[in-house]
Image (cartoon, rainbow, N blue to C red):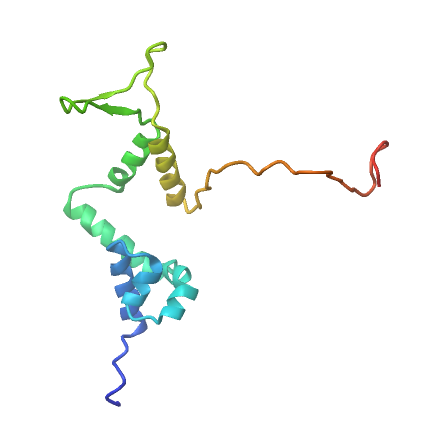
Length: 159
């Protein structure tokens, strides 16, 4: 082996290190680069590699081991997200430092904290493997003349 060549870790070692880096909170691309993958490969294949069953099983096994040591179950991880779906606004007093749940004076019902609720819903969707949709402004109305052309139109339509 030449002096200029470094010892490349095996594919299995890189997968294990990638899983460890993901557990530390690194993004998939950063986790792979830190594990010894080239930057170009990590950028082009990063999400595909971290979805591989072997890498996922390493992360899953580690989570299960920690949960067992901490005498916890997977449901203990999920419960805060479910609770977040019903999160009320909490108002903190700057003078005495106390906190209370905001209540609508007319209905006497809790005021929902929509930001927390949306974040909780996004996390739950992600756990199911979905991609949370971004909520944004609706598309602007078209300007000018809009012409719709259809085949086999109804009477009164332009074909």
